Image 1 (cartoon, helix red, strand yellow):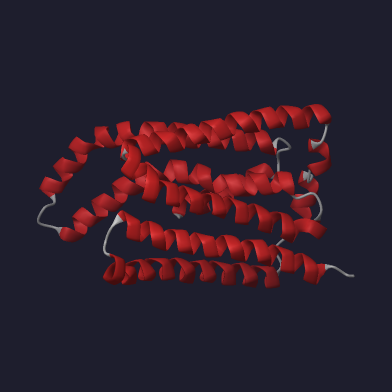
Image 2 (cartoon, helix red, strand yellow):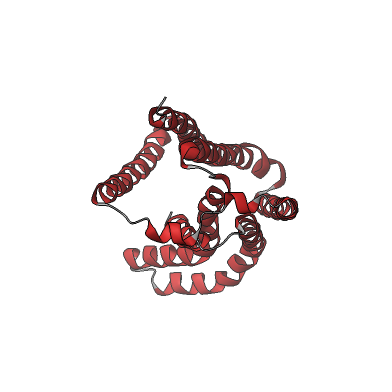
Length: 248
């Protein structure tokens, strides 16, 4: 979640100064795919370090937990930051007029989250059992690279047709747009909503253990349901917002 937030914030600011959103998106997908391919080797290389620290801190539970968190954070922060950047970059490409802002972003968020649902189901219920954990990682990484290749082809077509210019939001327009007090209040409420939502996810995960056990299937089932609700909510909220803002 830290990586997703950092990527969304940093690449959201970056993309407002660029006009090649599709190319940036392709580079992000390449980075994610390469991180996925490198992750098993990084984990293997860190094994001796982690084992040594575990033995040294075996008498200190909190310190050992902190080491586990630190190792996980260091491994995941780069690929998750790249993942977090994909949504604002695609939003820049898709949003042409503020009249369809809600619909386009809602549809994009819903599609992105629905893809997460399919990925969670495929990994948790099919691929890990069928081909193994390591091979599932490689499948995901290859998909990232294929998406990047397709996006670069699409970018070439768009650039050739001159369509990117019609989608451009100029830097001057972005710089003039400040954050008002009501907007800041809404953003704070949005952050609090995220805090509560992820709290629910953790609590529900623990509660489901009593009914479906502590397994990959239990976690996958909870996460699929959670993400599916986000996808449906994002899709319909986008439509509702545009309908309410329509002067007609």
